[in-house]
Length: 169
Image (cartoon, rainbow, N blue to C red; front, side, top):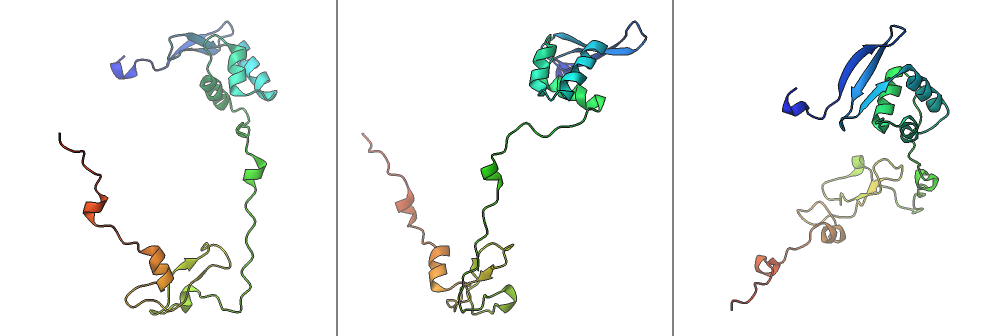
């Protein structure tokens, strides 16, 4: 076994008294752990009872890890279960959609835009009330004066951005 394989699992096949293959796994901690028929039956029962993989690992003990339980359950084809991570029902609910603003103005769509109109997007593109500002744009700019002020912020001169040097003593 090469140095890159140190600490990895080794599967060793053995036959039990009934002639069936059992697997002896040497886990990353060097602890021998065999999936005997009794352990597999206990795993199936605990899995069907709804215990978590961690709880099953504690029940089986002797070097059985949570990941070993999950892997064995997958290989046995046991029915999968929903994630044990609880989702807060408050967070799960989507925020209610805002009703479109009731204005007499027509909402400006992408097809309505011209070169001289403000192209500032308002809302989320997936919403029914998504539109563009549509006011007159500044010369040579894609946005109106208020949106230009928001989009383009002047940088202070480079010397003003440098941290002050400590005095030389």
